[in-house]
Amino acid sequence: MASIQAAALRQFYAALESYPPLVALTGHVLGASTLDAGARIIGDSVRLRPHPIPGVVLGLGSRNQGGKATTHEALRDWEVNLLVWAEDVFQAAEIAEEIENFCSLARWEMGPLRQAQWVSSQQMELTQDQEYISVLVTVRLRIA
Image 1: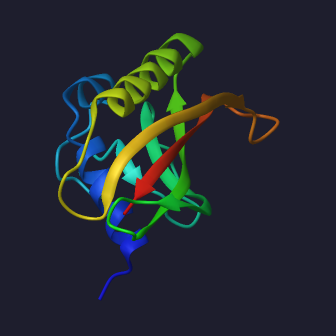
Image 2: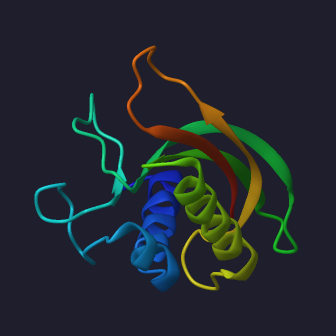
Image 3: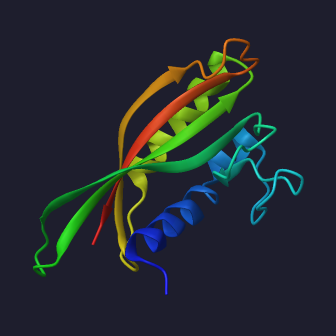
């Protein structure tokens, strides 16, 4: 049986990978789970190569205990990282903006995930000879 956090992460991913503006920007093929099959919004895997360009790679961040829900169950805040890969800074900005829009619109009433909140974004230089732009987007998941 999957943990609540893993279930919430899967729920977030499923909503993110079917968000039409993000799908259009990245060229993601709905339901694809490999780069060869057309996945451009994908869960991180060990040494994912090549990077999906353009694309969004969902990774893990940090978890913190939150406040109390009205049902007296603890809510958990979990900050997850989305690494955006793009051909240039303008494409990266468009994708990051759509992730922010997604977070402001999406709400879940079923399952463990309740809300996704945009936290921050910053351009990353992961290697000295980095060929593409990468932006680390942090999103806080509110889990019931």
